[in-house]
Amino acid sequence: MTEDRPLPAEIARLLRQRLEMGAGEIFLEGLTREQALRLVTAARAAGGPSQPTASRPAPASHSAVTQPPNGEPGTDPTLPDDYDALRQEALQCTRCRLCEGRTQVVFSDGPRDARLMVVGEAPGANEDQTGVPFVGAAGQYLDLLLATVGLSREESVYIANVLKCRPPGNRDPKPDEIETCSPFLKKQIDLVRPHALLAVGSFSGKLLTRREKVSLGKLRGAVHSYHGVPLVVTYHPAALLRNPRWVRPFWDDLQLLREVLAGAGEDP
Ligand code: SF4
Image (cartoon, rainbow, N blue to C red):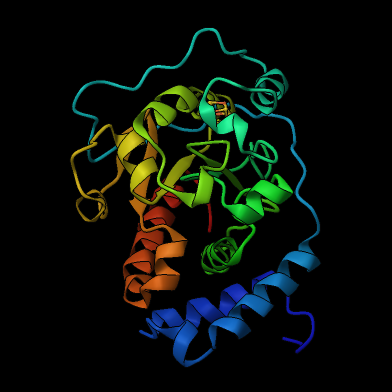
């Protein structure tokens, strides 16, 4: 690896090797957080911008370990079935109060034929300014961790949030906001048809599993199903930055996700 311009595959190989050797706190001990974030920034610059691409056939079926208790969440039949039309409708949406304080709607990032779809919570200040989800420190950390299993938003990961507009002051999403906005997300999932879903944080985890009263800790460690798509739930990368002890459980969840994708004929 060169000092100035490491390749994503080199970063992935290095981190995977260290984590598999049991270095659960690699980012604080072996690499400082600043060093790790610099590596990811360089890797993303080397990978170039992500562009939406054409949709592809539906993935192979998977066997899920757990099923939602009350059937699958519905989608809004009034939303367009065409991806570009859906995106345009979201970009102009005024369905809830969050339209009043946003700079712009944050719809997605990553290719539309992605193998993996990551679902987060809501845009923060950086996302609100750029229109791209997960671009701050938490997003860079997520990119770094995904790189350890050979996944990147440049090639294989589509990212979206439960809410498309930033809640004021980065407060938690309110139930009526989730109810109003989540049909956009559900339609995105149906149109992107990823091979697997990774819900990061309790809001997306509870929404997609329909287990609103179950803690995030209890949703982890199993493969759920959303409309037949395998779903793994884990911590939000922002929570990992606050509490490094959750890096190891996140790593375990990534290995579960890796097994799910391998079962679908994928190879991260
Ligand atoms: S958060 Fe969702 S429902 Fe509310 S205005 Fe933004 S796009 Fe529309």
